[in-house]
Image (tube, rainbow, N blue to C red; front, side, top):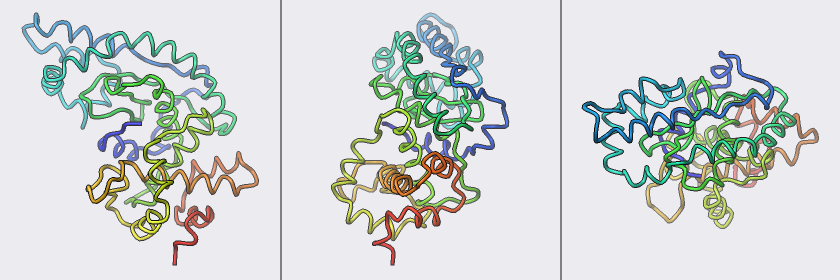
Length: 295
């Protein structure tokens, strides 16, 4: 699943408590897939040549509250969006007509949300806003709901996994204060694990394949770096020191969470703990996943 640095950083800046300042439905049936921003984007797109001013100003002005949350650090401004559209016009054209496909997908995804309700009865179901940005964010959350960068969708089959992953982020209790690699890896891995639990969709195939193949050396490296704030080579980009893919933090976080879940007697209670971690070192210890690598 493609993710961009800015997207992930902002995902993790929101806690579950922020999300719950607003009252969201607790019934999966009430979840809304909001696609009006896609319609407004194409209206603006088709007026580029004929309009005397930047038509994306109206796209932003008339946008949903979800789109407004997508502007900082992503869309930036109408001028920045126009420049990107001008440079990548053909790439944007590839998603024309995607709105109808998204609406059909909404019905297919309802069972996943009901599965989440089973595993985590405290879940809330905020709206999912499908917006169009500047190819720098595939998915994130805001205090108003889930935000999906529609222009980044290259494979609709991956979309359910992305939406469920971001839905899990919305439920999570995030760490207060400064964070480190261990915390962020577990947060992302937990979102992947619970998303797979409720949907059967396993994310981050490339990272998982590489991680499992190079487990020994990666576990040793992770233990040495897990309390650092620098996350390069694990999250948010790689240095190029080897051929590792992006997002190995998702892989090792997933494995830690999986180990914790498998050892738990009460599985539903384990999911509750996974989504409300307070002490990440304690959680790691209880998972026993890296026990042989920690001195």
